Image 1 (cartoon, helix red, strand yellow):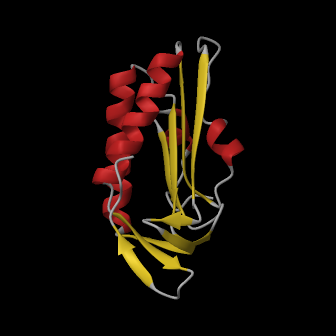
Image 2 (cartoon, rainbow, N blue to C red; image 1 turned 180 degrees about the vertical axis):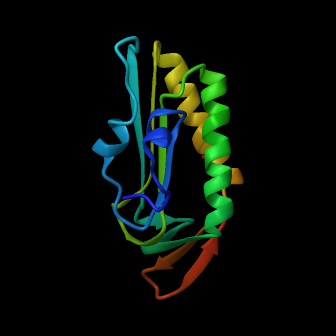
Image 3 (tube, rainbow, N blue to C red; image 1 turned 120 degrees about the vertical axis):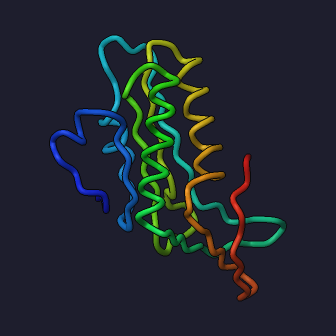
Length: 153
């Protein structure tokens, strides 16, 4: 599933991050977090919607400068772990062509309390859209297509 190489050490130490050209399996992402001490396990899925800026969307294509995207995504996840005080964060982003309804990004966070889990997942998504060099090219029903900037909402 992951373009990032996985070693036993990278799975067990620190957050789990991946950039994948394969479909995202939410159960795999969710399995990377959780602990008996946690009272909150949160899974966020970003999906391709059928509209944007008043236009009907048929699908989209994500591209990235992979070495930098991997590095920035890992740094971001590590920052969120430091803020949360745990390494129980997992995030994966898709690349390639996606159709309406497909999962484009998944974030899982577990923590002792829900407030921290929600805040961490929300901040992680805002910063991912702002900082990680992944670009989105939308295809519209009209036949037109356009590169779009990430939105902070």
